Length: 395
Image (tube, rainbow, N blue to C red; front, top):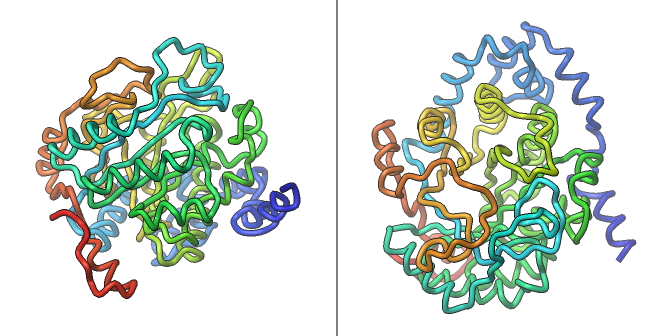
């Protein structure tokens, strides 16, 4: 096992990350001048030096121009559609100890811990399907013994009865485990590195399998090799310097686009707005910071999807729509049983945008976009895989 873990570090994106230590990234960002920003804004395809310039303080006076370019690029590659998805928490039991998370085993949180039964998963799916959702994200805490692979497989199979697209956000898995879930109809995998800074990562992950930085870092490549068609990554903004973590996130996304070219790669921008008392937020990210990060990454990654969750305030989410967003969650609950069961179990975090799915859809329409509950058909995927175009998704 140790030899396998060493191999993880010496190959894949870990090797790329080692070429860009934080000192080098910080120097590159600090060295950017106004002329570097202007040059970056004139390019069709950005270099890493251009990315650093757009993440630098020198880019702040150019945010309006960056926004115009980002809007134009997003319209070119994604049109006027904003996809809608919903998170479904299967369990809030967690055996890892992440200092920033209310689910952590030593977080001090007093809410009820709960793992849904298969019947309860079905009830939650039925409730969400009635809203019109066709894209669901299944989440658990980091507790492989509580929610083992067999449990995840059954959850995916149930969800596929109700939704055209099923994704997971769970603990990191082996390639063969991802492949088993893909064979059951899994479409996407979301997994946040939390922070790409090894030192900070070790400081905030105190216990559990999640402490293994390199194993987690390689998870998305394993998912891509296993056939997952959607790969979503991100850093938890606020754990470390957002400019540096944003730089690394962009490198990771571009790497996955090349190495897992059959998968669509997306980036999420979760901002740490609440944390247990033991975790002071040392690197707060302001609204303008988040806007600059999204714009810089859109210009660097014109073909990547951008996901925006209900962690952000409703009015702020609405203003971000034209800046590169392609997917938004709506009507979310971060509690197991938060839809059909209505139980007050422990939440991972309190959501900021409490609007109903239809209210979010209406806000998208007011912004001049079309809310889309389902933006693809697996019949196309089946045909491309030699399945004679068998239609297995719900219309």
